[in-house]
Image (cartoon, rainbow, N blue to C red):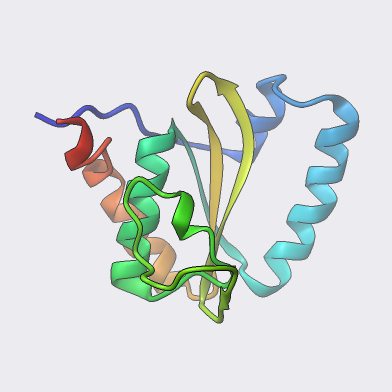
Amino acid sequence: MNHQTVRIASFEEYLASGGDSLEDQAIEVIERARRLVQFPHTVILLLSFPELDYANRWCWQHFGPADGNCLQYHSDYPACDLAGAHSHKGKWIWYWLVKTEYNFGFCEWCFFELSDQNRFLASVSEIHWGEKYT
């Protein structure tokens, strides 16, 4: 049996969570608008760190590498075999919004294509803590 705590959330729910100061939230609104220019289709989840890593591996397997600096070396479920500082060009990104409690928080996935957003949304029920936590 796999442990699962993930659930679909919204940007408004993140803002209402009180995890960030009002000033930090205002900055997040501006930075999010910048991200949405390139990656306009989003999904926000409230989840654990292992679920975040599991979801990112799923995205790599289905959409290819995430765009930007590669952080896979920190992952419980790394999808990239390259060592050292490097980056990728991809058609999706993820962005950690705020930690709400120990090892839990809000994360947003942003997709270039609407079809990728829809595939990711359809897979949310399959996201769990993964094989390291069974």
